[in-house]
Structures are given as structure tokens and as C-alpha cells.
Length: 358
Image 1 (tube, rainbow, N blue to C red):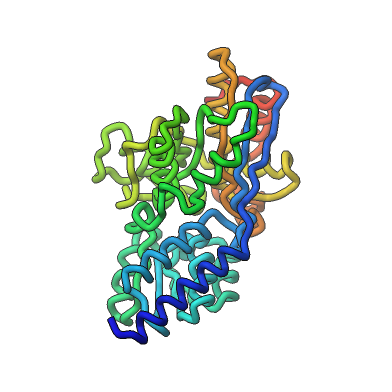
Image 2 (cartoon, rainbow, N blue to C red; image 1 turned 45 degrees about the horizontal axis):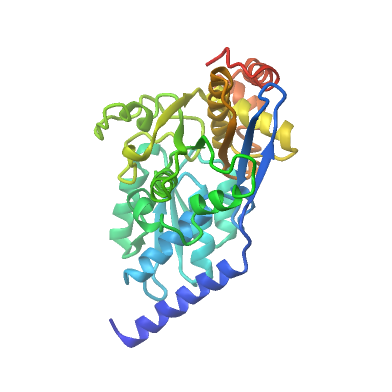
């Protein structure tokens, strides 16, 4: 490697570290519900990152991983396949490093996400078939000489799961002074699989009894493949929930660190997002609703067994990005989602502690 290239990489890493130093950690919110006495529910608010989502952590890790491996040079185009949130975060870091950026995305991606990527200087390449975005990204990278960040292939290896303020370390540290500092469960979704791999590995590394539950859109690949660990199994359907519910088993899925999988219907996920708005006064995306629904099922199990304790889940991204989709009743009806029965069922669970719908 030339001295000039090495100097550029050093400066790029310095910029990433400076950006990190200017940022605060995300908040851990605590909510208590009348039907779940003795059970404390915590919500890690990842929407307050500069790029508005959990994927800010992943994008930073992917750039560091590529830089430290010597895969990116000055002025080189970088690209990735994404359903939107990762691409927003990657466009942010690409601009920070003065690099051109291309996002290969499903044509069905929420319009606001596309606008945010373009506002950060990125270019969006839209693909009609959501299952084809990764192949298209790989082909395009080869055609134009770009570096493919490959979030689906590199997520679990790019993140330092032992520490470096990863999301698992952050949660456990923030829980330290709580009444039940060691959660009974942590709940997350799987998009790339990087977050679930980081959480599961860190819990084992710290020798904690906390169990990890994946909240998955019904019929998606991780849920179907998890019982047998068969990586050839495909998803049965495409989910309306952006960012999770992959149609295939991604390379970064690590089944062995997951203790349970709860499948959540799309209508329940959307209702969960609406319920979070009622509870917090703020909007979060559909995947946060998926997490809430799975958390309530686990909380109901704890209540039924007579146990107390704490549960933690993630608020993944800002709901304003979904004004035209998840938070638009016309869009929901057009996609066959009847919101009100699920809203009533979830509110009843908060009041009674029972999941009669599970």
C-alpha cells in the first residue's frame, strides 16, 4: 500500500472517530404497564442517532471494517443493497469521507427514505424485485469499480461484539443501576443479522443468563429456518415491515446465539408502531412495532409463570419516514391491514397482562 493511500485511510478513520466523539449514546427508556406488575419494560431508542436509526452503528462499523482492510481509497464509489435505513446511514458516512455513494433498493422503499439518501448526496438505484437487490448491487459494483460494503455479508464480522460501545455493551451498562439489571430477555429483529449476532455473543461473553429473542415478521426466512438451521430455506412471503423479515437466510444470521423466535403478523407490527406513538408521543417504524408485540408476549409469559424481571427491546428508527406507509390508513387498507382489532388487542394486553391473541 502506498504512503498516500495509507495516509488517506488514517485521515478517514480519524474523521469517523471524531464524528463518534461528537455523538452521545442513545437513551434507554422505561415504561411500566398496569397489567404487568413487577415486570419492567425498557426501550433502547436508536432513532436518536444522527441518521435516525439503529443502522447508524452498522454503517460506521462497515466503513471501519472496509478501511482497516484497505478496501476503500480516496474518491472511490461505495455502494450497498438496502431497504433504506442502512443506506441513509451509509450515505451520511460516505459524505463525511468525500466518497460517492449508491444505494440499491427495492422500488417499494418508503419515499421519504429515498429523499433522505439523496439529500445526503447519495444516488438511489431502484429494483422492482426486493429479492434481487443484493445480486444487482454486486453486479453494479463490479461494473463501475465501486466497493460493495455488503451489509448482509459483513454485518456480523464488522461489528466488534466484545465492546467498543456496541449496542449490547451499551444496554447492559445502562441497566446497571436498575432494580433488575440483568434482563430476562432482550428482543430484536433481524435484517442483516448483525444486531442479533452482537447481542447473543456479548451476552455469552459476559456470562449473563439473559436470553435473546428474535422478533420476526410471520413467514420470513429466519423464523422458518431457525428450528432446523437449514440455510437453504427461503421466506414464504415478503413483509410490509421494512428492514427486517428477509426473504432468504443471510450470511450474517447466527442461529446458535438465539434462544427463541416469535413470529409477528404485519398487521400486529403496524398496530405496535401506532401503540408506541400513543405510549411515547413519538413515531417509530414498523420494526419497532414488531419488537413491541414480541416483548408483550414474553412479558405475558413471565406474568403467567409468576416471575418478575426486566425486558429490553429496540426502537429501531424514526417513524416520520413511514408517514406514507405504516402511518397512512389508506395505504394500510390497500395492503389488507385492518389496524383496529390489533390495536384493541394490544391495549388489552397492557391492561390485563394476558396475550389472548398469541
